[in-house]
Image (cartoon, rainbow, N blue to C red; front, side, top):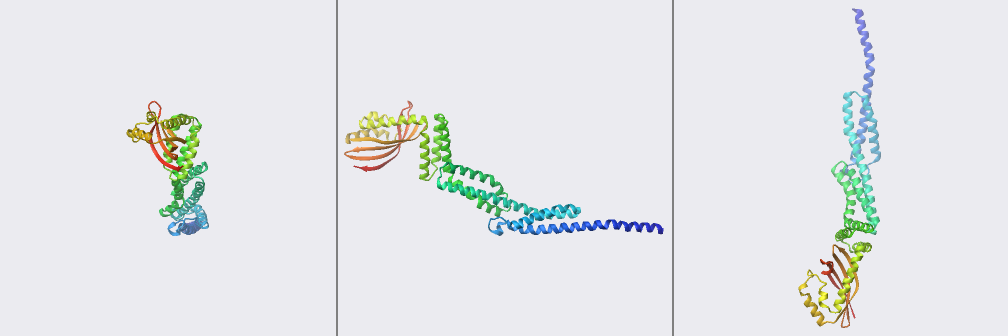
Length: 364
């Protein structure tokens, strides 16, 4: 019995000697992991407020020293979890993820958003400078599309920022100015794009229907532009382009002949021939004959076309501006008339409407 007891006691002592060092090592690992997690939590807690607009009241990069301390502490603590027992590992990993990693990843998103936002601002500033210098240039149009593309590309990173107030502030600082630049110029750029399409069709010698349809789109876009100097620049570019179109030039010659004939009939007081140039749609057409008869009877007027500009021809309709001089009793008057002409069923041009009339000068 004594011998058996001695064996049991000896075995117990030996067993205690075997397991005690392992328990001490485990405890040491838990203590080290706990310390690393606490350090990471400390840095992450400071980082959390670096990326909160409610606290900072400004959008700027966080203190990168704090960010790097948080990152280093997290990645130093993470592998230590493998040395901790299951029970403690679950608790420590949860703290590491909930109190450290979440703020680290949010900070990365915040930093990425600012970096992306700065790219938008850079392109917006470039576009604004180009637009101010020459709103209708090819370079400006290209910059517009680059800005638009940059906003679409970077917006996803801006919207990933954590916290509504911080996210809204990010968007207001970076995305909104770019969008405002696009909105303020969209009608001008749209008109420029339609003009480019027209030029492309003309260069490809597209058929009359395609070219005239694009002319119509250009004028629709031009109507939305507000600044007169920009309208003038776009129109001048359009007028230069359209005069490369053979169909336009051919119909322009017809219109020139039409006005030449119109002036001849007036000067020769050929009433019926002159009336034949008018569509019944023309304003006050019913009284036109009577008014002309009265004019021919009471006045001796000589008419001369000083210049003629065919602004557009679309589907048998033309907008034409005539600068006309009339001489009566040694008095010279100059008027500018803008007419709408339409082709009749036989393909002959007719006066359809008078859009505008103004006195240019009175010279003797």
